[in-house]
Length: 102
Image (cartoon, rainbow, N blue to C red; front, side):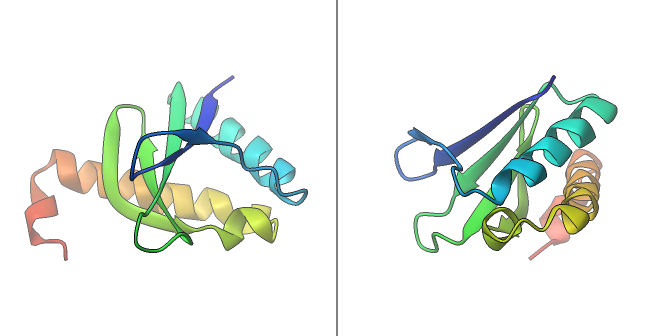
């Protein structure tokens, strides 16, 4: 099963997403990661906006973030779509198109 982590971008420390509604979302994230060949997914909390969680798929930190309400409000029905968008950002970056993204 894929490893899901949450870290503070400011200092790299790890924190847990303990909100009761997050459990289902975390299960869906792990299933998505397993199905797409990612051993780990990390969400980095933005130092300037605590509601932004920047996505890292495997070793690739992306220019794509997910709002923390996805976890705190238990939005399991949208997390797969959001991770698909993140994977698209990863592919754009690998192809060199990330320099055009703002």
